[in-house]
Image: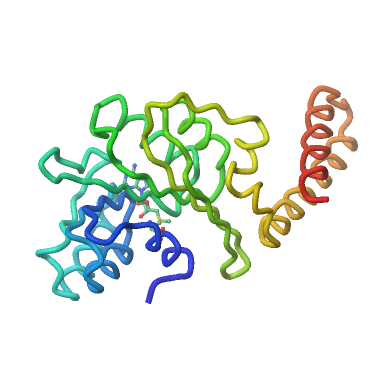
Amino acid sequence: QLSKRLEQVAAYIQPGARLADIGSDHAYLPCALAQKKLINWAVAGEVVKGPYNKAKKEVSYRKLENKIEVRLGDGLEVIHSDDRIDTVTICGMGGTLIRDILQRGVNNEVLSRKEKLILQPNVGEKTLRTFLMNNQYKIINEEILEENDKIYEIIVAIPTDETIQYSELELTFGPVLLMNSSSIFKLKWTRELEKLFYIKEELKKSKEVNSIKLNRLDQEIDQITEMIK
Ligand code: SAM
């Protein structure tokens, strides 16, 4: 049984996909998909020995060795060109880490610019969207969901020849999410607003009030307030 978060990620994977799940931990996502015969084949990548071993164990326990290969390595380097990967999932990490993994994949030409990316950053969504825009990936879908009192975003992107230009608002809030403006979206940004108000009060208490920082905070607060009203 997958978590609600990974279930949502799985929903964006085309049946018959050849998947690379990077930072797979227990390999729950590829195992669930392979067991339901929803993927053709998968590589589960892990950079840390502990999770790598857990993934190996899970795959062998479920007798899925012919469907999932667990590989130890940093980010996308576990992908070989003859794997014919068409879908990459990177979930449950910070947006900056996901961005760095993708950037190395672009630099080393591991990404063939055909892969669909399904990304689930825990924080730092704006950094990730900016990377996607600058590398000609188009965001075709986004999800926001709540599980165990945490709010998660999922970003689905495909390579495109078009020049992609997202506004500051779209980069911050998500081009798809801000169109839908769901109750979870409002909850996420209401919580964010509370955090910013707290930071502002703390900043005002400090001996030397940094007016540049305060100004920037006020701008952020105004932007969010406008978005959720
Ligand atoms: N993807 C799973 C999920 O969403 O439930 C597991 C998320 S877990 C919090 C993050 C995993 O990413 C850890 O097991 C960590 O070892 C792995 N990881 C972090 N940096 C990595 C990298 N550069 N390459 C591969 N795996 C990485």
